[in-house]
Image (cartoon, rainbow, N blue to C red; front, side, top):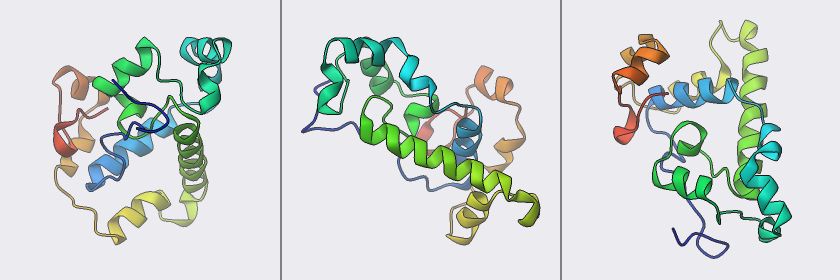
Length: 149
């Protein structure tokens, strides 16, 4: 894919525009674990082959696949580089902080409130009501034609 230290991979939805996309990113972050990245085959083989010491481990099939067809976290974060990993970790801790203080924000996480106040569009917000497995089965689309969940 020709990505590397001098040409970094940029996720397709780095900065969401729609509120639906912000909710999707929130739900995906809530269902993940930031430390699991250290136990993936791609990361361990990159450490073993010294590929990760330039801060990027794009030289594997997993990275090529998620860069060509991003789903889940790869829509929002570069999961095959240290800068992307730190961005993901910051977002994960931010989402958990927003979740912890939901009793004080009327049951809606702070990052969703900030999305509303910052003018994210409400286009397709009804798709939040579609259960994840049905959204996956019927290939429900969100921002820029990317699949929901």
